Length: 204
Image (cartoon, rainbow, N blue to C red; front, side, top):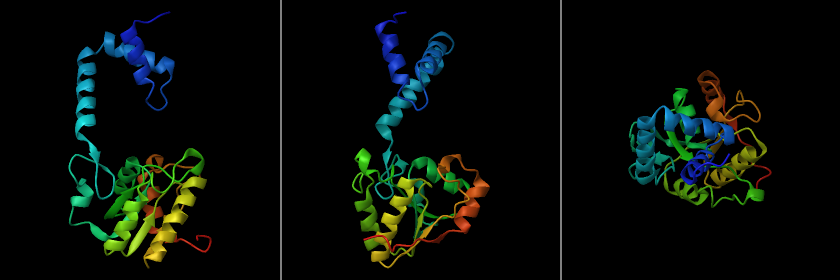
């Protein structure tokens, strides 16, 4: 069946969402158009507003509407600790565990040379500047337990070591291949408490 041009455009737009295929996109589009046009309008306004107003914190790269996110602006946070995570969802997961009150740095990915993702794409130049200029005593590496996540952790641990900063890795109550946003709060809290020193022998 051929859809109208605007309906085709809507279906294609919905498919940009993770896990949404042709059938799911069709179901959502039909629901919004047939059952909830008011909701669809609110969704469109909220998306436009977020695209216009939400950027990245200039300090940690978390989503923010001001120059600094709420965590970086909170003076009660321990400024001597930085938890390195891959995504904004990981910040929420770690903070909700209740086991950490320091600050963050969000890589927005992990090292993957085959995909063209190197240190520059992850904002590691900004992280290096923070390690040099701030009074940081510990870097907690909370990247995912994947090959790329481990390589990213080792690379950052090497940078921390050059600045004389202790680098630790969260303990892996987090399963191998797991993503932080899907791990329960108790497991994350335990993993943070049992973090260990990161070996840097293999890092140039």
